[in-house]
Length: 461
Ligand SMILES: [Zn+2]
Image (tube, rainbow, N blue to C red; front, side, top):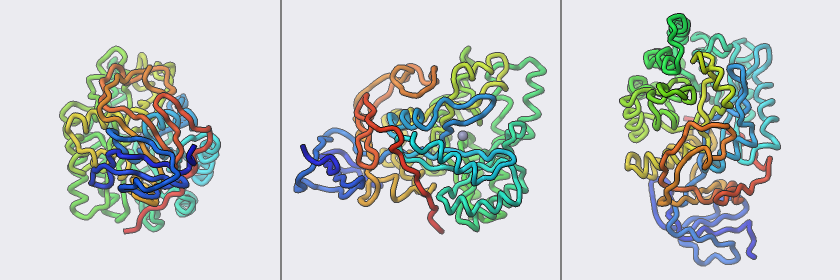
């Protein structure tokens, strides 16, 4: 038996930047040692990858594991969450650590780290979330950046849940992040519009899931995006809009960017595969998330945006609540915990709906799910590509096999699924994390806790 720390993946179709070609990939000591025609390498464990795609492991910088929210907690802890991530071709995640009121940001960050340690099976990082603005919190920003968490998130809504930051506070946070070489991530929905709409709709008896979407119209998102643009312009800091679900917002943002504002955005899988029609179903609570699902026209615009680069990347916004918790919203949409599980489905859905349907190219797919999240969130060059020197985080993917996505064919810890009977083209066969085979078809071979903390730092300039 050859040494399993030296692996040669032979003859697969390798995506390296914009180039697609048949190559061998040589893994040694957890790293990608070489890529090319490597038939001369001896004493290796060989894997035949002819007919398969060899892709960098996906990077999902937007997941909510162990997240306490709307009277419940997500069922994806770091073990279950990272296991389903790995089945879905994800080899790095970055999770959110919400500051508790009265507590420090550094504590939130360190607590999150201790939740993940000994549990996660893939590598992971942390985004601190500021929920209470104080002068002390501002001074903690350089500390968490120094400890490898340079991307801090704030909410422009969820005032009643104790998450919202005021505009003036966001300016201070953005400035301090700029000085510390960090980036401010914003959940952009205007609180005043939503907070007026919800009680009015409930009073009028408009309690069904579709009113979740109507209470948080695209105009509320656009208004908050305008504020986010002003923050970028006023401070010169980098702003990243999470889960963008607005065509007009995307337009405004790319105009501001062309005018010199340092502002970027992601969208999420569910906005690309579902529309607000799902909220009209009897089981519409499954698709309650924020921002809400939009109409077909918006979905088409988002596809155009991910294709041409106005939207930098796609994440899952995995927020996996139990069916019992989702049922809090059975009679009132505003009681339903907002979120859709999706850490496992993003890679397959985006390949199948995007690449297989001819909407995006294969290299663009790799950028959207791996390279751009790794670059923009400070995981590169260790993560996000197959260039030699990086971690051997690799997906072997059969682009032809068809399968049906459903509760049974997935591994997420939820006892329900938003993804039922979706025909998928392309199947993940093997997943390597730092050179170790962790997923082999239906088997997860990873030891609990093998995942490591990713100390991130953003590129300057
Ligand atoms: Zn989120």
